[in-house]
Length: 262
Image (cartoon, rainbow, N blue to C red):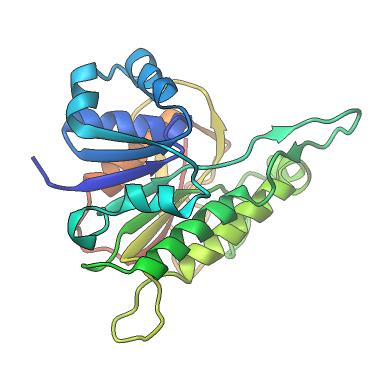
């Protein structure tokens, strides 16, 4: 079995939990930082069909806080000051309605940026052997620099209801994009590569499989391919597993933004 090592943040969320479960079943070495380890174990066994043997054999769970540098360091580093190969983050803050205000507010409007800032700072301050990890973050459509990547009918939802959340995701992605390690460049970032996943509106539906998912890697120009309304969290997690984990080591652009939808 491959010696690929993977760290997970936000492992109790629907997308990342799916990727983690598939990774455990495939025998990859996994590490997860969570606030409630018992909740994670129950989720993996009850909702994702993962066995206790698979969990005990392939998963190391650390109880802690994603905003704590020592906690993050304990998960992303291995023996010999080497980092894990892959880091997958699906951290996000949920919108909540307060009082009579029809526009939801985010519980922590800078959480996504703060988590990745802490991760990047941890990697920079400690350094390490090797070329650094490949970081995968789960973002959203609606923040592409190339143009509108969602159906016109969703404009009100994206521009008004999700504006605050999208601003946080955008700030997070700007930080990721400037943290790529560049050969021969002093002060360059600590990441070997990154994949930013721009998923359309997330649902709690079942996994339909890769054949039902449309995807496109953003280039230099806007494209109308892979523009849709929704995709389930489980299919987002499955896409990450199939494309990034199973495809790890393939000759690809070091910094990728992938748009996925039904």
